[in-house]
Picture 1 (tube, helix red, strand yellow):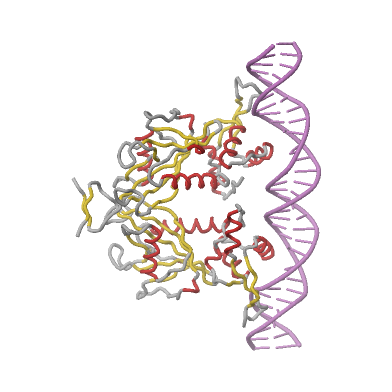
Picture 2 (picture 1 turned 135 degrees about the horizontal axis):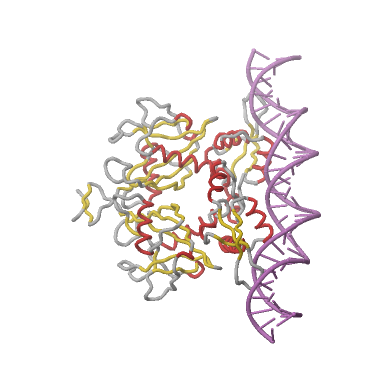
Length: 229
Length: 229
DNA sequence: GTCATAAAGTGTAGAAAGTACACTATCATT
DNA sequence: AATGATAGTGTACTTTCTACACTTTATGAC
């Protein structure tokens, strides 16, 4: 079976820069390539777009097939199309970036045997193709976006403490934040709903849990509210 | 001559949402399609990506071929990939958005004979394919971006008055701005260099000309300066 | 059970930035 | 000389941002 066209066509792939957050580290999801080129090396999850699916469907399918992840925040990132980025043929890659609640997915440590693993973004291995550049683009987008859109919540479990959230922001922005000012600002947006639940079995005063109020977010967004931090 | 692949490949095009600013109106550049489908209708300038050029080269080539424009600010916008967006075959389009100094290019009024024309964004004709959606995406990006990056200058001639700049901002943001506050803020960024030139032959006090100081912009950008208006 | 340790939680004063607002200056036209 | 059009300019008030330190509450070690 083969496909013939009157003019040359590039191949089109989708790739995802998937971030997770784990206590203290921002992490990136990589998969080991099972075929040449770069067989056995780490790469972004992704693959070829099929003719009957749109781009987002394609990346969701690939993520499911390669990593089992279905619940994530997904957004198109950038399209990479240098002529020589794949040694086989001309391949244009539509990159997505994604945020995942890490606690929902088992954390496998990277080894020779593992096919999928989370790496701290500060200690990434070499990656195939031009995926390093795609990762950098994704990191820059995350950092920029977290300042003016409440997407940090996507990286946390449904309920979290203000301390968790602050650690996340400090990690992504790579700078310490003042606790009182942070709380004032976050609570000032009215996006968090305080739960009547508290941490248990911690060796210090138990923190209150909060959850992200998505309805409230949609309301405010429609009114053009500015979520800048 | 034909091209055969083991797996199906989509076609890939580039399209550009090109904005210009003309005294009072934000304008969009459209071209008349010379072939089917949608022959004779207005569409975004663009075309198929060749295998030996990257995406930006492709859109620059198409803009030159179709409109003669070479000097412009260009940035990738979004990639559109619904399976049925082109009736011929699966076509994925990488859209760019571009800002042009309108005074550099002749303004042809749209007619049955014209192949290229500027339209006020408030009075756009029907456009081919899903180009309306692409235009909306471009408009949203322009509006968002003008708030936190000094890209408005790209739409103006090299030298301009503060009044010109304010009219541009008011048009793009669709809201009136206070003259004194606007000037304070714009001049406060230090991005404008006052020229020792003034308007001539105007029926009112002559305004001073300014120019965008690109070097200063690069300096500030590297230091993480915030250009928010 | 007391002490050490660890993080949670809380307010205020001063600085900086944003906002609202009105008149004078200068040019061309009549 | 009067009119009409846009340029150009400062200040008071409000809001937001920033810096900063102590008390509370839980566990674990002794």
